[in-house]
Image (cartoon, rainbow over all chains, first blue to last red; front, side, top):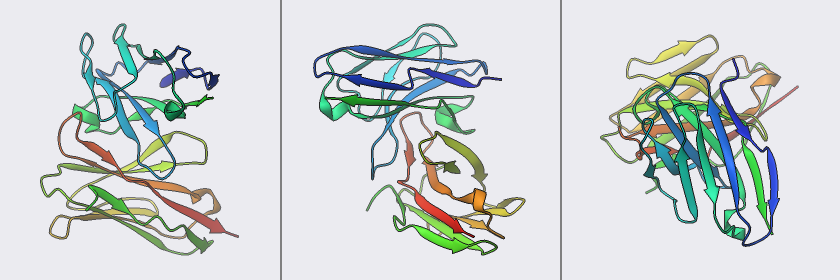
Length: 114
Length: 110
């Protein structure tokens, strides 16, 4: 019962580099999300996928792209990393509308952009 | 007014104490409410949903007051293992309408 698995757990990037954060869930949830968490701020939604084949912007989508590869997998790509993207990133999944039954989160990716 | 507001001051309480957290929300149309727990450098984990009728899970009791637009979490007989940050979450009813509070940190002291 892995739940939501995220990789990598830690990453340091130089400004301008690109990377993809991977996320997979084994709970057969329809909806998946990417959040970022910064000190003093609540988790903020970057992108979400209500169901396989759909993706939509959240509150802070600039500088990111996503792919819902199949029902299990939802990846987040930083095309040209900036120091402002230094953050902790969480993938989540849910079985209800917008987390109406609660989210299950992955363990997070700590990203530093220098 | 922030959409969801929690007291940012940390709570330091002795073992066995009762502690209560409140969380206010600004939109009266909010539909569902949750408390999450987040341990240091870990992911948030769902603690409990909050219903108008209130709900209880062991030492934890959650309440919703729609008239005053706040939710509360009461922890009785605090344990050292309760030390964590408690996040309130309010859902307006859509994918983009879930708002997380910034959390209140609880430290239970021996």
